Image 1 (cartoon, rainbow, N blue to C red):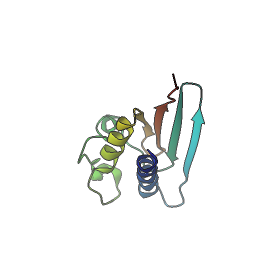
Image 2: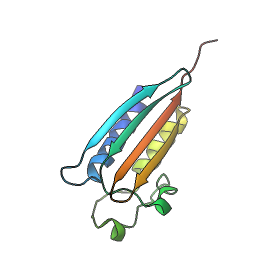
Image 3: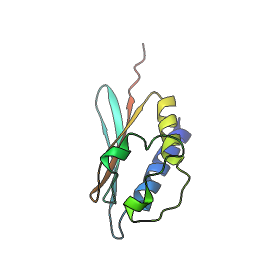
Image 4: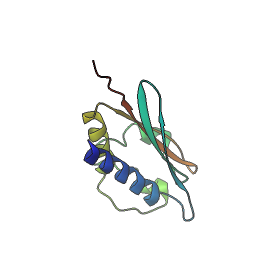
Length: 115
């Protein structure tokens, strides 16, 4: 589980840096309650258009670079792999993003109780 979690965080942090503005900020935070716990990775980067957000977790999907005005290399596999890892651990991933403002990726896992 730790190796998968390391890969999830590494990929989300890498994207937050890669798609950020020069001098932008990246923040990672954690929260928990009795039912679940979450990790949030937030950036002040270029953001993702609303109509693109539903597809970013698909394999090989890349946001149209003509809209980002930024050339960033990649295969389009990173977020798909993250989503598969999260799902394999019983969790969920979501994104809240606004063009020109930044993105927040939230990964949530249930707290498993012993019976």
